[in-house]
Image (tube, rainbow, N blue to C red; front, side):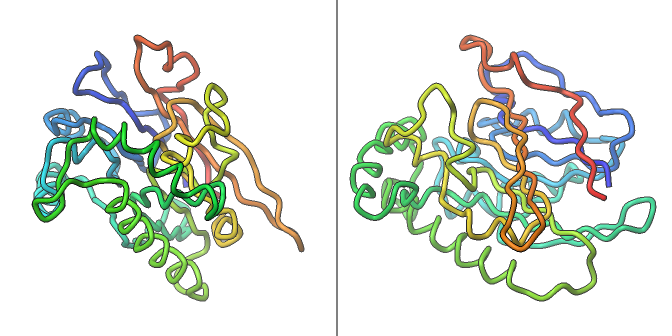
Length: 258
């Protein structure tokens, strides 16, 4: 299966026109498409199916409990399939069956271990202020993010432990990164990096391919597993032009699952 991957387009402020990649059979949008949601219309009538995993900025200035059903309906009206703690099996033109496992994942702030969790959560306060979301009327703060992250992690762990069924390959799609290996080299091991990456390295062997966004940089690396096999991890974020972040972005990147 040939997958076009886009994320972190930030069309609420960026001047950018997404284009279908030649030969792609599926478009995966790995979050932070548009905080205003208005640019979702650009994907109506896209020539191939679209899978979407929400990013944190899809909830900017919104009430969490209202935003999820509204976002799902908003996507459905444009024939975009939203995955949140859900799996979907699709077959490519050659009959290969690919299971897509999707969730935003969020940050549990355990990237550097429990001892540094509190410091990482304090650093997240800046990002939560920018997001300005609520959950049940209360601020959607770092503690609330961790609650959601742990629920996402538990679901992922359970879903990825299911023995292979009616599928040949597994592709995980998250907004937040699964490993410190995806950290933005501009910031490295700072506490704030735990707001972007999780320590899901133990789950990587359960996937053939892991697609993510959130980091405004690009990654394509393989993680080798003991006993054989490997997982490819890809991030094709675009980011903000004013910071020069789109320099390495490939608007027509296609990843092949074989």
